[in-house]
Amino acid sequence: MKTIETKIFQGDSKEILKQLDDYSIDLIVTSPPYADRRKQTYGGIKPEKYVDWFLPISKELLRVLKPTGTFILNIKEKAENGERSTYVIELILALREQGWFWTEEFIWHKKNSYPGKWPNRFRDSWERLLQFNKEKKFDMYQDEVKIPVGNWVKKRLNNLSNVDRERDNAKNGSGFGKNVSNWVGRETVYPTNVLYLATECNNKQHSATFPSSLPEWFIKLFTKEHDWILDPFVGSGTTLEVARRMKRNSIGIDIVPEYVEMIKAKIYEKEFVLFEPKSDYKTLNKENKWSTHKKD
Ligand SMILES: C[S@@+](CC[C@H](N)C(=O)[O-])C[C@H]1O[C@@H](n2cnc3c(N)ncnc32)[C@H](O)[C@@H]1O
Image 1: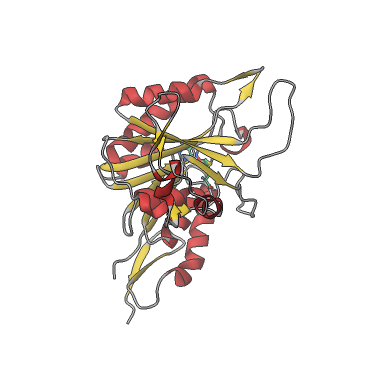
Image 2: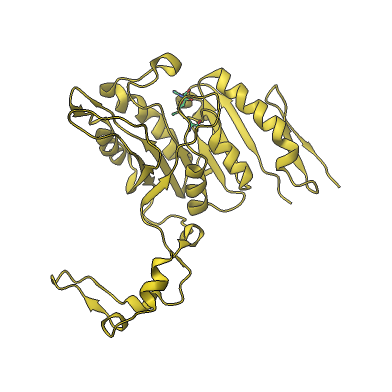
């Protein structure tokens, strides 16, 4: 039985990432500080400086990611003085220049977003989950995220017309068409690129956590057991906890020492619960040193 490793580093990702090997990571999933947010806790980078701040970090991410790997970036621009900031759009263009493929944009639809109303807009209920790759062909396990087909389909399929049994081409000549009878007998279907996830309000002692269902969905889709996951802005450690639970190795980096200590304490506490008793296992002590233990 192979050991699952979880490594935690404290410091600026721009520097710490230099310690990681080339082509060593299968999935990067992270939520960096958004521009102009949380100045009291960890800085607050100005929107006009954001691309310059991010590019040295993403250069290292490009180096450590395997050619088959994926980078998921959770980010959202805010609106100020009646206008949305454009820094995320500028970042996407700059990342393409740096050598990344912008493969996809998933939308995280926040099921329980903050209430509110403004004179010129409605409340913000979604965030971007940008997918970047090094190559156009990458590892993706689509069957792992299939969802139940839903009850509507049973009702609909009990009443198939003749048109439903053959390909029904769209009347507008678009070339699209559907054959409804293809759904018969299907229990699950592929999801869309909109993820409906509730934000989590449990006490994580961090002001900007994402829900564990977020890294979990991408870990399922892009990795298998014993692959390596990296979160260079790990915060309260959500990505590491989920990766461990899913038997993936992981590396987390955060600049705030208190967050790093909090993660170490959490993982140290849970160690004996998370590991199967009949296997070799590693423990992380409070000095951030690992030791391997033999189990019989
Ligand atoms: C949005 S939070 C991440 C929250 C995380 N996804 C979670 O669920 O807890 C961003 C984190 O990036 C960290 N951070 C900011 N600048 C950093 C840098 N240059 N290097 C490493 N971490 C940094 C902050 O301390 C903060 O914890």
